[in-house]
Length: 90
Image (cartoon, rainbow, N blue to C red):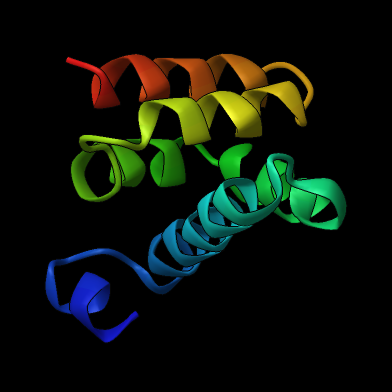
């Protein structure tokens, strides 16, 4: 959170990035996002969090994890997760 704030993100953006990062960990460990899906959905409804994730969370090896998040979330969050997956796989 401190590093994200120091990078210029607002507190809500930094918090949202952290929530999604926890979702990625849950996806990696369990293969789905289960009970954290509502939290991931809530923060990714904010376009500013989506933009922050593009800069701070995409990367090698995360594409499939973002696809797991997409499978467990409703639209428009699903599409945002798929975009993040595509960016992670470039």
